[in-house]
Image (tube, rainbow, N blue to C red):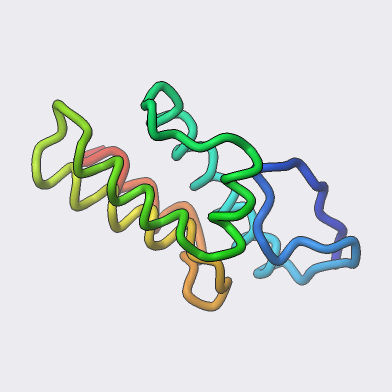
Length: 115
């Protein structure tokens, strides 16, 4: 059991000041990694939300919907890449940790094929 740092907007929605079990911490890291990838891929897009909007999207569990919209309108991605990114964000940015991916070995192949 350990405490997790708070770093907005990267933190998972279930963050609180108490201690977490190791699997809970991994799932929180998965969410944070999804947030980082979301920012890295879409920050230059005019539809990318500000920090207050991100917090609202996180609390409404609609950040994945925005990710889907941004993926669909991103030029230069083929259908397979769009499908992989959609799956990646559905596994990483889901509000309920029970539905979230359990590790990076599940997520990384969706970002980089054939490695």
